[in-house]
Image: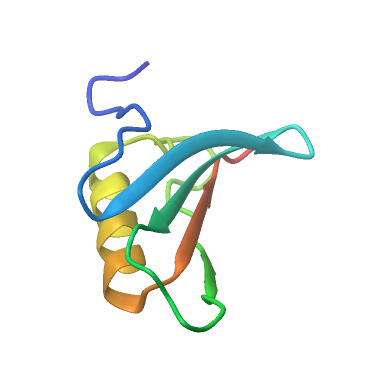
Amino acid sequence: MGVQDTKPVSDENITVIDTDFSDIPVHLYFPKRKSEKQRPAVIYIHGGAYILGSFKMLPYDSVNRWTANKLDAVVMAPEHL
């Protein structure tokens, strides 16, 4: 785990979980507030040219939390393989 890596910690607005989709690790961000409609999904693929960074880094975690909360969307952040 890198220095800026985060664990899947939920807060008062967002539920965060780690899971795998077809053996690809992902963080999932779910807004906690109730929604009357089906939420959109956002796939956030971080930069780094497949050699730097991780989906677990604090700056990416922060932007994914903000996106999920602001758009009332489910955000999936996959790790590159």
